[in-house]
Length: 234
Ligand SMILES: [Fe+2]
Image (cartoon, rainbow, N blue to C red; front, side, top):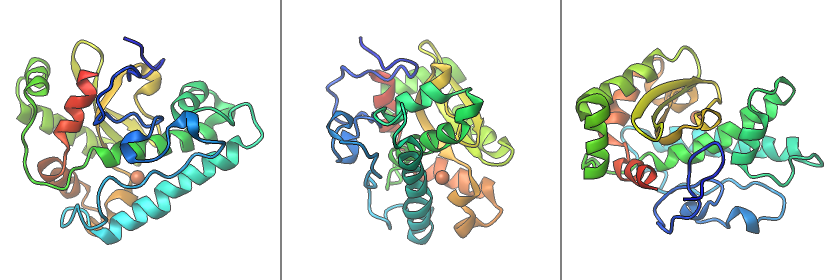
């Protein structure tokens, strides 16, 4: 199967519900190869009120409309007239990771990619039906779903300062990891399945300093396990 270098995210799958940020089809915007020169802010896959009461529309409107938009706008500003102008976000992340002179571009490209991925990790429903394929993989890797969720919460709560907690696949087993600031699993050649944003801007308007309460509510009520399973199976 063909894969995007560094991410393990396949390009050949025909599954329409599988999120591949650079193709952007899942977000209802033109595919990367069709864009002219600007990265765009993909539309949210749900209404602003859809995640309430766990995440308020007020919080979401700032998070998406101000923070996410700012990362996309900054990428466009930074790549203009450079060798990076025509690269996808994923390619930008892989090309700039670990390069001190490109830290600002990496940070903004990764944050733009991470947020688009993150929105698809949230589902406006309360069911916790985990697809059987994913549940089996979780059992192999963590013992059971409760342990997986507990480790994800632990990573989210113990990430010092801004960052992300991730459920990823290394191709054989699932892992929980945390990353600081804009860093993500793509340069580590790990396949993201789910992520939690633990930057303060993700929860402060609703939860102030109670990050753990926000994390637990998202894990219990909003995680999109079908999206995670789709990412696993591609
Ligand atoms: Fe964020």
